[in-house]
Length: 541
Image 1 (cartoon, rainbow, N blue to C red):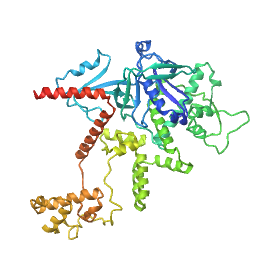
Image 2 (cartoon, rainbow, N blue to C red):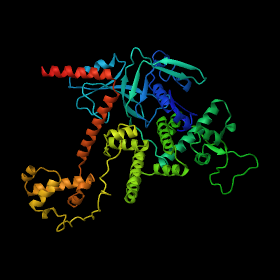
Image 3 (cartoon, rainbow, N blue to C red):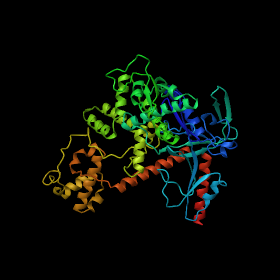
Image 4 (cartoon, rainbow, N blue to C red):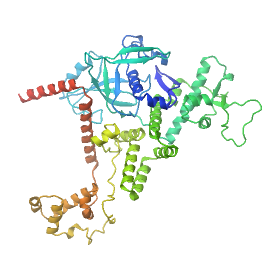
């Protein structure tokens, strides 16, 4: 969460202060690399490798010793960034060429690597399909999975990581393993602002911070009668992301009670007693065990909440107070309501205003709470994604995949006079009745659509009628102004779910192959190309 850090270090959850939003924005790229490196750090020669849960406090987590994997995000703004201390796993997926293919066994390096050997008919762990016979590395966390590509460091080059200790000292280490991470495929949903789910987490996080403060005082041998919790301290831990009045209202009175100086009484009209700054332990409260405390505020929820706060800060950056307030309200609007509002607003807009609304709609659709929700819905079979493979959109957004749910085609606007909606059963006898068309009329219409005269002559009447219906429907769905006068012949185009899934799979494979070509090391490309060439030669022989 913004202003609060929760990490799982050896099974212990600790909440402390973190950098401000401005510091995170300023040091975003460096912090992302260091965080990914710390998350992917593998102890090689220290006792942590042999002893489970050897790291019991944040001070035990350090990049000054052990083995370091430097992982850089390829995305401009990753949806989820792991907290220091959270575990990560380096996994290699290998899809067999045939059922008897045993090449994946050699990738384990004597049991040092985690290799998942997939059968030829096994589904891909990624949105795109894996190439048979080619290993694909991946970074696995509890929050996301992403393909990982190793970049070779030349012999005459050096890559070093500068590590700053809490006491101000610096340590420089040479990085021997450097990876680039593709786009994340999330495992959790990011909280949407101003929703019940987000407010419920904030309440749990506030009370978890209160309990951890009491636990710390108990560890310091403070008597229960003398335990105190100040709202200002909790607000400072959250870096003022949550106001003090909201903190007072969300503190559970079964844990702590307001403490007032002698002679000061509670206001009669104050239902929540929210003007007190200092609280004392409720005598009837009994401390929960560690498992319950961890469930109150899990590291995965913290990552999702901090992602929401960072995205909201980027949305408000550079806007005045009124514009920031409007964008916050839009961010908290459900996607269905936002879609209906944008469609209703575009009807009376100029082309320039319509273009601005389209950009704003795309901006909100690419926020982490929308992206994670749509991706998980598509993976769960509850939605179909519309994956745009255009290079222009990729350069504009800084992402390869755009997890946007497929929507039905909108009615064409701005391309001509609006056609009146025809009720079912009222086409007969009107100018939209395809059965009234004569053979010369069908020939003239199909010629206008660009169909060859020889092909038209080879079609009988009802084949021509069916082709006109199909072409008119496609032109209407694409908002083609050249054929707007023939929109009366368009009929409802219902694309089956299987066809939608096929189109999604084809687009995902195209994007995934592009990611591999772009992020894979050039020498590895040449090696794989040489292997595939030799394989084709053997098959020909």
